[in-house]
Length: 387
Ligand SMILES: [Zn+2]
Image (cartoon, rainbow, N blue to C red; front, side):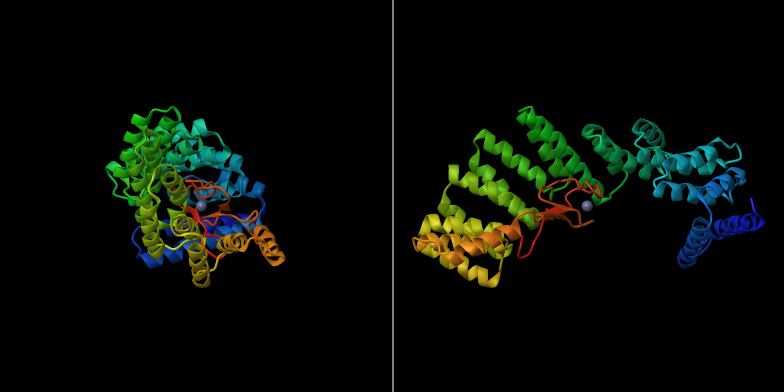
């Protein structure tokens, strides 16, 4: 190792040790500044020296309370770069050293579990995380990682057991939402076996965890429809708008189908009008127009659609207007055909849903975002080319 390199690493190690000492008693502002300074120094180290050189350094660096942070930063750096083998070596090396102060052991174990998770070694990650669940300082983080792992494996029962344990001593509303959605997964599984009784019990349990859980309400709507309780199923569909109007478009198609097959259209028109005034969306407008057409005829429906398009333009509603107006005149004009063709081209392959948290988009509704792994963050897109 060249002398400049050794000197630099020694400086970093000493600085980290000094900072660790200071972080204990410093004010928040000082902490942030110090942490940024460590990051800068680490960045300097990684950009100026090869990974092999850093590996050698880790092997030769003493393990004590002042250097643990440095070991951990290096391990994390390798993991973030996707070099999980190296990260695992760093963390295993730390745990194997008898000089590691015992109080750092849970933190290093958690880091190692995250390496295993990233490497896809899920059994090993699971074993470590389960072992850490009761830790006072890192237990919560370990439990959350364990939930992520079980979600990845679609082990909904195990994930909900861990989430339930977390809600016992934790009033985090986010955890109740997770628990509600995990319970919905179990309800869907029961429904797939046509075990409606268990599915209904689980959907209600999900609503106890989180009253705004749209999915639980849609599951109840499905169960009630299968049971032939159409009016109650309709009430569940309407409830979605109060829970989270962003998901109104998800309910409206089901609601229309239900009312067409079993309900009273006149009653629906009144409700749709009220809902549209409160939560305007293209799906809702098209449903309202369809209902108005059935009750009051096509000219009234066309008038309504034209008026609303002026206020709230959308490609889907425009296409519907062109189609309806064309039929009304008993012909379809060349211009009408052209507008339809271009409109359909605009809509083809457009994402319909987007995650409000990470921006992931697609044409299918995922209740659990495949990208940021959060529940209920993927929603119908609003705007001229969407809702
Ligand atoms: Zn996301």
